[in-house]
Structure formats: C-alpha cells, structure tokens
Length: 388
Ligand SMILES: C[S@@+](CC[C@H](N)C(=O)[O-])C[C@H]1O[C@@H](n2cnc3c(N)ncnc32)[C@H](O)[C@@H]1O
Image (cartoon, rainbow, N blue to C red; front, side, top):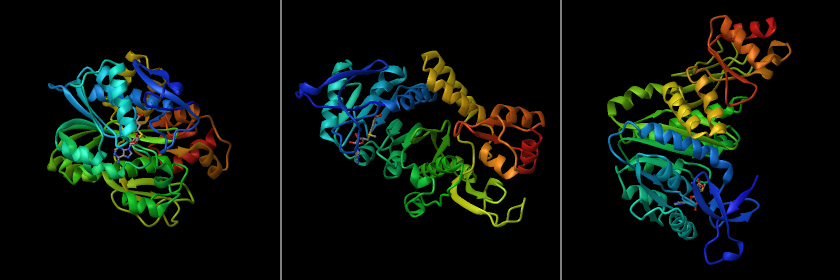
C-alpha cells in the first residue's frame, strides 16, 4: 500500500502529482501517514470516498435546493473537492483544517482543479469552532477525523439544517470492539463486548452515539448506509429536525444479549439475564443501535449510482451490505457455529441456500467472509449445520 504526504510549495524537490478520480492532488511520498504528517492523505480510503460521493448524490438528488456541504477535517480537501465536482446538487463546500500546511495545500488543490473561491470556502480553525459558527447552515457534514469521531458529533449535529445528511468515519475500532472497555464507556457511554461479531457491535455503538448527539438537538438521524471494511467503520444517515420523529426512533436504542455457551444472540430494548436457549447467564453490550444500519431502497439507489460511475469495488461492497440489510439479527461466524455444532464448516452459499429453503431469511454478511446473517433460531441453525 502506498501512503502519501502532501508537501507545501515551494519545496518542489519532493513534490509529485497524483489523481483521485478527476481530482489532481500534489503529494510527497511517505512510508506511513501519521498524525505528525504535514498533510494527511490515504489513497486506501478512496473506496470510502467513492461510496460517500454516491451516498451524497442519492441523498441530495430530490432536494429542490443546491446543497452546502462541510468538510471540517479536510486534510488535502479531497472529500469536499470530490463532492463539488462529482455531485451535481452540491454548489458550495466548506473546507477546513486546523493545520496551516493542510490549509495551504487545500488552496493549492482548489487552484489546480479550477475550483473558485465561491465554490470552496477554505478556513483554518478548530473543526468544532467552524461548525458552531455555521449553526443550522449546512445540508451535509462529513466527519473524517484521526480515530474517534466523538469529539465532533455534537457540533456536527449543530451545523446541520432541518433536512440534511451526515457522513462519519471512525477508526478507533479497538475501543468499540472491546479491547478497551473503560475507554468505550467514557467515550461512547456504552459497554462493548469482545465477540466474533464485535465489528457489528462497534458499528451499532457508533450509530447510537451519533443518533444521541442529534437527538439532543431534536434532530432525528436515520441510518441509510453504514459499513465496515479495512480499519474503519463508516456511517451515512439523513437527519430531520423533529422531536416527534426522534422520540419514535428512541426505540432503536437498546442492548445486545449474547450467550457465549450456545452462541444465542439478540438485540432488544432491555437486557435479559438468562439465555432462553440454554439457561446460561447472558453477556450484554450497549446501549447501541438495534434497528437496521442500512435502508435497502437507499442502498439500491447508491448501488445503481456506483455502477453508473463504474466504481466497481465500491459497488461490490455495497451490494453485499444491501443484501443483508433487511435482517437485523447480528451475524454468525460459520467456523464458530461448526465448532459448537460439532460438525465441519460448510460453504457459506450452501448454508444460506439451505436456510432460505426452510423459509427463513439468510444472507452473507459484508462484515466477514465467513459470516452469515439470518433470522432463523439458533436450534435450527445447528440442525442446518448438522444436516449439511
Ligand atoms: C484523517 S485526516 C482527514 C482526511 C481527509 N478527510 C481525507 O479524506 O483525506 C484528519 C484531519 O483532521 C485535521 N484535524 C485534526 N484535529 C483537528 C481539529 N480539532 N480541527 C480541525 N482539523 C483537525 C488534521 O490536520 C487532518 O488533516
């Protein structure tokens, strides 16, 4: 994998150019980008940005106004620049970074790509200060920090208009996946759980946290397309100013109950002490989001947009997210199921087809190449494994 650092002019010696889709960027080679890099750019996050372009395009396309978007942790400005050039309804982007070298680089990248000062409003401020300054003004905000998005979520909820959208990248996965339970409680007010499906639990903890930040401002965040890959989790949702809607969706905040003896798992409003399958004591995680993390209609729209743009890798990932979107039950790891059922692991497609033939929903999950999501009962799952 190639990582790059952006250099400032006139240190021309190490400057080189790269292109991400239609955007020209100036970069300087570096073995690993870090917080100390002068300006951060990670080409491995291109797929994240590709999908974000299609999400924004889908969310804004029925709007009867031009969209003003914000990229308050902009780095090179690549996200905002791509939104301006690839999403027809975006008229203005606020590109902000606290690092003066990043800001200089954003200005340079705007010039190279013929983006005018009317289109791109460039600033050097703390991200939260900039979002508080633009209270209720932006149609979309993209939170893409180093590590945890938590320090920026309240201001993000503040900057959004009555009808708007939000994108959030999180990379502190070890925290929400159970490696640092105290940090998770402190940062997200939630208890994590180390399990074979901990990335799904993590995604749901992030969602609940982002939802509550919006809820504090009577804004209702509805997840439209969320996914996990590589080292990050990404949330994309629409936001409506409505205390009534927010109250209604409070029912999507609850807990995970999990039995590490028989692998029973369930998302529910309240915690249950004993496993209904084997009577063992249950473990719990949460509060977390217990509703869907993707909306199939929205996901299909994004998928069609990705296919039209020929963003093939991104389309493959989103096709998988959409396929599993209507099943909310947490996913199972086939190898772990096989171990508990005292049988050999079976092929994922074969297992899915068999469970579907019994009349249940079942789909591969994008979280793991050996994961399935199904609404069938754990008993029937073990029976299926043994039959196959
Ligand atoms: C992960 S990078 C952004 C990457 C960029 N969005 C992209 O897609 O390439 C995070 C950026 O946030 C900036 N940053 C960190 N803390 C900040 C703060 N409190 N306010 C504004 N910018 C900040 C860093 O300088 C860095 O450029």
